[in-house]
Image (cartoon, rainbow, N blue to C red; front, side):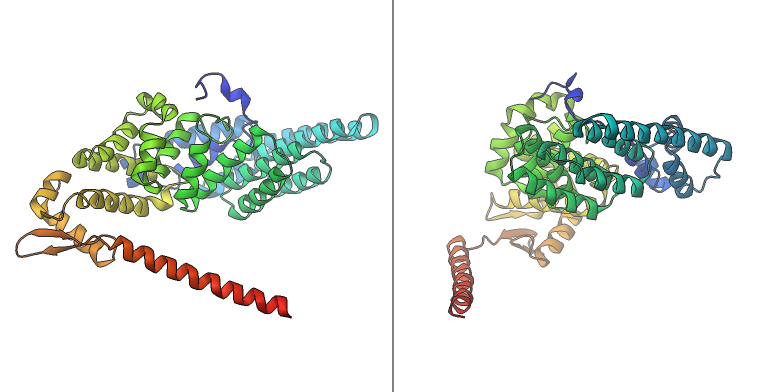
Length: 396
């Protein structure tokens, strides 16, 4: 497991600064939601504007002022524009000097510095143009990968999935041509973060868990946030056997759980069938999801699926049980459990039925052998269809 101190230097530069994207997200929340999540929006706004002004982030200043319906301070804007012009002129001079007097490596380094500066000040379109030019001038696989990582972070910063997916695909192609160990691991973290953002928790869990002991992607997030994401995705995606092996008994994750008491309770309450404690932890996890720009759109889905998972886990242990017993187990009312189970049974999410008169829940375990037989038949039909199509092509 990476140590929590000192390793951030091992990551790439934090360009763009994704903490700014987080603050912008927090300011989009309505007042009641922000209050519920204990987010002081006036303080967030102050910190955001201070960061923007200190970094002379001209385009971000315009964008944020528009988002928050703030009046632009013309003197501040003029100062920012003057500083940007001065810095960009210096960077252009450095590129020109490198082209005249130095080698390809120095030219590329000078161009990368301009890419980074344009990204830092929030000039999305100019950054994209400069990054494309720099990629065209870059020959080595490793340096190309670093530029694609830069582009992926730019996509996360501006919530632009097209930029993210295009550059993830290109990065994966380059990795196959000979990416080094560090960049292979970095790509897994980037891929996991994107997978989680589009609700593919299985792929997210697989990628995150593969890199728990080798994480160095501090340009995306700190290590504790990474572990939180790994737990969130794994709890939903993994079956009990894999969850036990990779999370509950995972040495690297357990080593930092003392710093994450909520997430420790979340894992072990479900694992140990302490359902009332699990519901309490899930309620707090819901708050974490709502406050996270990547996970917020999936909050309702995630919480619903985890409730279903916990209900299914209890029901699997019994052929029948009373509504009263199940309500007590989860620390909720019988009315709540009856309503929840009725909804999930109707949609096919739970295999059970409720005897409303007797207050009994009866489980309907699916016939595993029959299910496996049907799956084999289905896969066989698909294979035969593909063989027939292939034979027609070969005949032609």
